[in-house]
Image 1: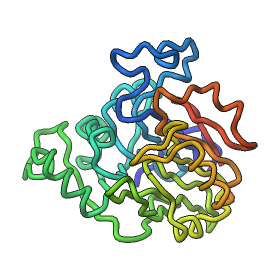
Image 2 (image 1 turned 90 degrees about the vertical axis):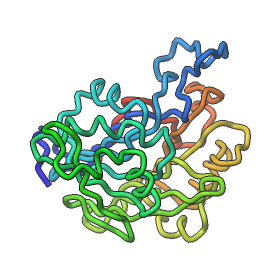
Image 3 (image 1 turned 135 degrees about the vertical axis):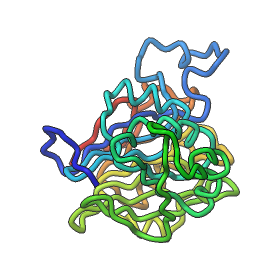
Length: 266
């Protein structure tokens, strides 16, 4: 892993590249108050985060808006990419990783066996090219079958239900300390997962809207999960246009609605 040239003095810095649901906010052709909100925090690209550490930098998911997000945040270094699952709003910016693999000649890609299979199918031109043209993406696949390290950060996969499918969330630990759990897409948090991430410093969790949904947590369900986990602070992500940023005022203490461009650090 190459070091991230930076003036950061933190162990871990996380930037929310996007906090929106699969359609983004504003939603095309919608006249609701949130889609026309003057609050810039109500503008949400597809959910993804950029992680910076003293040793390396990596992204969790490359959604449809990845290029726009990378330009907005002036991202210059990506040493690896980690995927939660293969739904289109989490993988369709994959080819834009090629800009970050030029110097190295390849890009480490971490995903479950199922997600890697889908990536190989959709991006066969990248995975199957024996000698890709200079400047094109050459993935280096790594199948996730347990905890793995990126620099000094240990990522532990957290399988959670997403409707009828299972996706990976991740626990981020450094020096044995549970800094963050990222559960961007889930419809429940099983007790064994809640126990595994109990008392985590920061929980980032799916909270689509107030009303129940078959494949995502509602606000009430996300609050209940955060209470079971005992997180020090909680941030909602994967938010749709039915949940305005102003709803944060009614949330429990230390519970927030994340927004695009928000940075957290430890």
